[in-house]
Image (cartoon, rainbow, N blue to C red; front, side):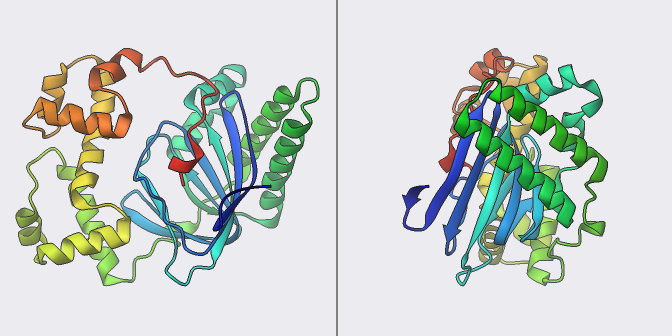
Amino acid sequence: MSTNSSNEKITFYGAIDGLAIEHMVRFGPHNMKVKHFHPEYEIFYILEGQRVFFFDNRVFIASKGDLVIIDSNLIHMTRSTGSSDLGHNRIILYLTPDKVRSFEERYPSLRISYFLHNHYGLYHLSEEEARHFMDFYYLFKREFQEKRPNYTLAIELAAASLFIRFLRDLRKNPADASAISSDPRHRQVYYLADYLSEHYMEDISLDRLSNRFFLSKYYLCRSFREVTGYNIREYINILRVRHAQSMLEDNQYSVSEIAEKIGYHSTTNFERNFKSYMNMSPLQYRKHRNVYVSGVMPVVDHLE
């Protein structure tokens, strides 16, 4: 067992070609430091404790026995439930888009990318479903540590079997029952996040938002950050960058045209913001969009 700090212990981390698992125990409150979206898919299972998740402009509470599926490029954030949070014990399965595509080429009926894209969210696992997930984890861990012949194939086949069970059995909590909706402050932030998602390409000032929602600028900024983990401006920038990705992939518009369409008056400003989130310029992203190295897993510290 390795230790990153006095407040967390990595019980296990293993990665093969495009597929990785991390098992970590954290003690006390912990908030994700980097606000992000990324091409990797995440499947997050909580063994003990609780986590607050923000995605789809809503906040969800995930507890012991809950599974959270994070879609590729989904804007999301996780944080503690509060200062009295005792910590959590969780397992995350990471998959690259290339690995998902390779599964679908070999097993077309699995339609993993369709499932992950259309059925991401929070699930409360039954005892049987939880046992299947943990069986997969233990097999991954054993095969990775022992490295017997064809161990990567054994892990991949087990992953395919896990997804068969997901496709057959997983049922999302009815009516998003875990979403926090009774708190008036949360509802105000949800309305604001929805508004930003619809109007991010426009000139959005704090004055405009204050007048729109009949709330002070200070209250808007503080509430939005406390509920979502983002400040308003960076959330707008992330929405713009995410949309810019698809426009760059289409090859229909120049970088300056994209910058204008998503709300930037300056191409330089757009390029700077894009690079701050994607670690490459828009032109580099366009050039390399189809060059994704299978097996290069995300750096653990920047994820959760």
